[in-house]
Structure formats: C-alpha cells, structure tokens
Length: 470
Image (cartoon, rainbow, N blue to C red; front, side, top):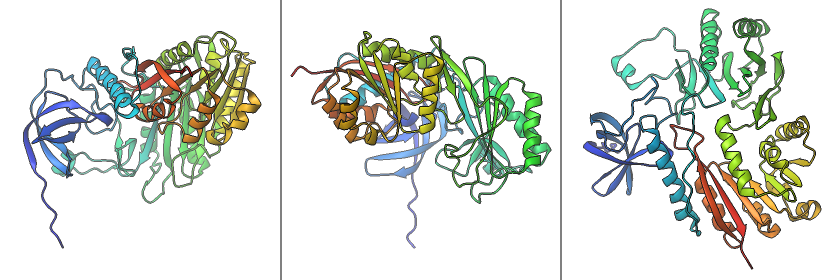
C-alpha cells in the first residue's frame, strides 16, 4: 500500500486577504493557501490539510502575531461553530469585503457593463438580528481538538446545537448564541435541562434512533414567539411532559407546535404539524403590513434589514400605479404585498404550495385585492402561454434561490420583454451568470448590495435592469 505523503507545516505566514465562504488567504511561493478564523495581518503557522496543483488548504496551529485590524471574538464557540466566521473582522472591514465580492462577481462572471455600484447598506443590528434558528439533538457531541488531545472523558455525550460544517452526524453543544433574541437561549437551555432530568433520548444521527430530533425557534418583530419541537417517534407521555413544561416556563410562546418526523432527513416541509398551544402561526409586520408566518414558511431571517432590502427593490421598480408586475419566487408574497399598492396588478409565482396559500392569506389580511398567486415549478408555470394569458409584465421582480434562475425562465423573461427587471439575489455569483444571459436585451442601471448577515460572508444584492433601445 502506498504511503500517504506527509503534508507540510508552513511557518510564520502572513494572512493577506479574505475570500469566499468566510475564508482567509495567504500566499506561499506564488501559491494561494486558504484557511479560516484569522484576519489580514495575522502571522500564523499553518498545517496544510489539502494540497492541489494551484492551491492549498490549511489549519491554523499557532498565531505568532495578531493583526492590528483584528476584533475580539464575542462568542465562546468561535473557531468551532461554523457560523459567524468573520466576527474577528471589524464590521467596517466585513462590509468592505462584501462590496468587493459583489463587484468581483459581477465583473468576472457577469462581464456586463455596470454603473457605479452603490455603497453597501450595512445592518444596524450586528448581533441578535436573526428571527429564526434551528438546533439539532445528538447523542454524540463534537469534541474540540483540545478536548481530544487532553483525553477528557464525558459521562454525558448529548448535545443540542449546530452541525459541524461538512459533518452530518457531529453536533456542537451550544451554550449561548448571539444571533437571536435571548429567549432563544433560554428555551434551548430549558429543553436540554428537562431532557437530562427526565432521561429523554437524544437523536442518533447515524443510526437513526432516539426521541428528540430538532427544535426551531422563531421570534417576530411583533414580539410573538413560535417554537417547533420535532420528535423522531410518538411517545405521548414523554412528549406532553416536555411540552407542558415549556408552557409553564414560557408564557411568551404564542405558537407551540410539534412534529413527528420518522424519515431519514430533518426537513419538515412534507410533514404534518400539530398545534399544542396557541395559534398555528405568528405575524411579522412591515410598513403597516402584517405577514402570516407558519412553521414551514420562508421569511427573510433578518426582519429589520429585510425592510431595507424591499425598499430598494420597490424603488428600483419605479412603479407609478399602472404596471403589471410579475413577482417570481414570491415565497409567502412579502414583496408582492409590499409593492402592490403602487402597481395595477401583481402576479406571484412560487414552488411551495403552502407558501402560496400563506401569500393569499397575507394579501387578504392586508386588504390587498390586486394580487394573484400561482404554485408550481417556475420553469413550468412561467411559460409563453402563461404570459399570453395573463399579459406581458411591465416589471418583473425576481428573487430566486441560491442557484439562480433556470435558463428556461430567463428565456421567457427575454421573450416577454418587460421594461424593467429587479433582480434580488442572495448569491451574486449566480446573479452575475444570469445577468450575462440577460445582457442581449437588458442593461444594468443600478446595483445595491445589502448586508443581511453580519459576521458571515453572505451578502444580498439588488440589480435594476432596463430594456435596451432596439
């Protein structure tokens, strides 16, 4: 058997920049080295973990000198948890890097003529800005390198927390998370303490056995709280014992829901939900509009910054009240309802049927009567026949998932020739690809990045396009 080649230790290496996916970069002998949890200016030793012809990946094993631009990590889980990788990068440097990310993607991938890109809209709240978090139960918690090296032994290996990146069966036990309102920590810790005291089995992610599987906590800007507890199998006595304990401890919970999910994956979109206490939904509010949020609903996870994002999209649409608007990937109809009062009619299309039902309810609850909603795969719903039946749109607003738009959808848009397109994206790389496809008929007139997720590399970007003169 061939002996595996030992990978080198790189000593006294200066970190020179930041890269995609929250990584940091250094250069060694004209080769790029990717690593994590350091910032430009740090001097480190890197243990190479992967070596290719054009790049290497490495793990920091020692920091000789801290950068003057380094911020102090505010979370005790930093460096282990996969989230908030940029918390040691000052916020002004984070948004600068995101601005550059948008520029690089649009120029290198899009290869289209661009106006000056507007300065990124930073988030007013940089901690506790999320309205939704999901935590996983595991009976085999993740141990740090230090714990393994020290040979620490644990009587209790149960964990309730986040998956370690790239490891489906490893979960880091979370003591405190700074992403959501403090009640999220309180609910999680209460559930964990009750489970320990009453010997409720945590889920075995590899062998698929146990009782407690996941929890999802939603906190709305209206002050309402939704908790969804997912069990692997039904045990009425144990289930009701936990849920009744939560009712007693947290009168703030306005929607307590449970799910019995005995299938292989964690998703509950195809599972029945049961209300144990309160309503089957909570409400978000934006500019006087109320949006119904159910346990399966998608809603932007930074409520306050979502308002800023939608204002940009509405402004870019330049509506006068006479336009037919298509809102593609409408979700629960938030953008559709948000722009409806300034349009003649808005037609929303979304893949998830439950989301479309919520969209209809949202329009009705807000006394909006100029919207239509359709559920189905975008490329199957948005066809030339659909446009012929419902009318050619004056404006299209599109907010696709990270993969961007299907080529068939782009073709229908090009054929429909709306005067303006507003493209909202959570992935500037796929957005840039689609802009290149649209370039044959459209020019980019405005670009506005928006930071929805401080301390991460993720960035939203809104682009306005106008039909070129023929």
